Image (cartoon, rainbow over all chains, first blue to last red; front, side):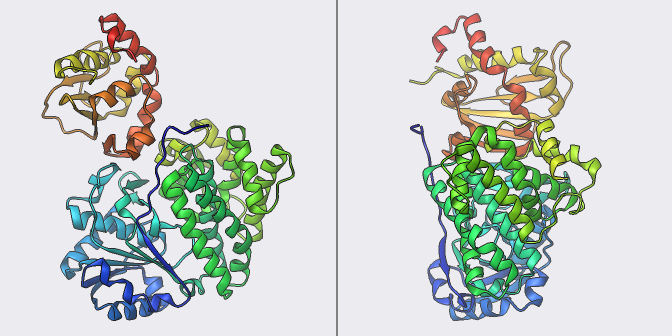
Length: 385
Length: 141
């Protein structure tokens, strides 16, 4: 079928390599800014992961004028505004975000308000941020969100207990530094859940109604890498090659879903994160196979393609390949040692209905290959419970 | 050539259709339930229609339609050209693409906007019928 239109955009310069966190100083000159403000969390700080980055900043001629590290998982609008205040007080003019998705998305939210003023809640919507923001360097310490290259910041609205998406191509970092050494200390459970997050980005981007040729290629490649390397990254946390591959895959999947968007698995994961603080990657992991199964009637051929990317196809029979892809994901979740159901993740059974209702009005649901009703999503949740 | 020659014609077509929708027993209650004030800002011709589902409506209406300027502060603001708006109500605009292309902008809580999409689906059939009814069949696409 000849598409009427597609677009693809990625504004981020990506540099990758072991030890690069201490060696990207020469990349900073072209970005502008001289007063670096670090956005991170306490775990990253306590692990000493800031140290190599600070060395790079010094080489690049930047002064570190302040650090904001009070960022919880599933960060909220209130946290963003606290970070804005801290950065304004310190006089930072370039943001350096070091951490997982919550940190990176908080930095993106801060960047909006620092440049455009007002309150972060004012920027919910589409097409509202149409100019470059101040320079942002993203140094991911988990291999999952791909936030360093995406046009989204997903941040919790504390008032409505829901995840809100802020969208603009200008949200993606100017520079992403992928250093697998920063992820060596990630415990197996976090490696597994963040890796499954990356896989969910890739799978949902490929199944999305907004998929396009470029995102398709990226998504399938990310699936190939993750299928091959996630088990090794989980079981042998010091396997630098596995860490490198997963960090790369997360970034590639980020580019894919930034262009193609996602679907019902993310909509449900956002709902469970907003309502019950279920970690995003874990929620995605527990729902991905069920979401694929739910979408099977609409995207059997695409699911069959995934079987080939996962290395469990093709058999020559489309329905068998599609089933194999779903089975592969289910087995992968078990293989990397994650909980097997939402109940084990702390989701209350009497909260499933509210989660399904909330997911039905999440932005992610709009590009799901099937038009989902609350009843259908409730069924997906019940099966995963 | 633009679909509408001036704001008055847009208000007659889209504004008039919204006023019919305000009485519609299918769409009306669902939009009322949103308790939102939504402003549609159009260009070419410059014009503005506000749907007020928050404040009390006139008897027989589920919500109020205001054409032109108003002091109400919207919860959701949608901006687009009048031509895109016209095509939208025929169900001929891919929302994701329109947003990606910058043909539409949306300000406000995205879930609130998405929640309304199923509610307004009947409009895609009713809008052409309405145009025929008011003698504007030349606007059909």
